[in-house]
Length: 143
Image (cartoon, rainbow, N blue to C red; front, side):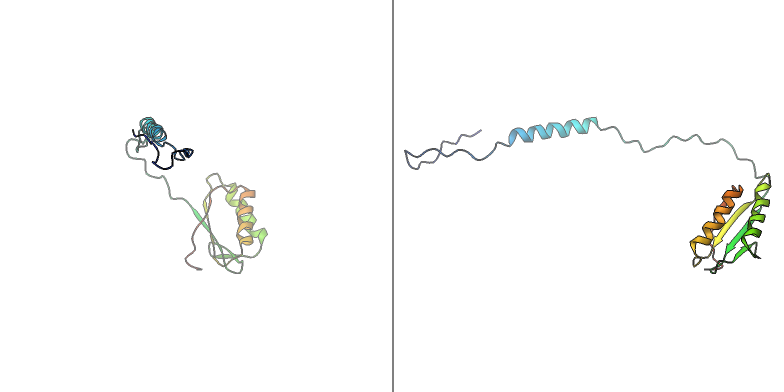
């Protein structure tokens, strides 16, 4: 610790107030807070507990039936490479799929240039009619 005795200037002059703040207590408090934070941080655990099945899974009983719906760039809808002339024919085929107990997988493959309205219409029809196994698939043929 040091002491400021002032400058040896004029004898009758008023002493100037010290404008510097003592930073030592603030630094001590900050160090204590940092140490407390480091002590209270929980240990990092990089493992995730999973209940994995034991043994080999049984082989699939049968291959799933796949129905492919292609949507061409101009909005033409193809059901397993056969052109569907109108929305009513598409919905009739989707009703047949939805009526089956073990529904086939419906793969919807839209062209990247087709309007979203056409693809959304096919998906909405499938959902409304009860098709549960439907998915979008990349379409390499039309791209």
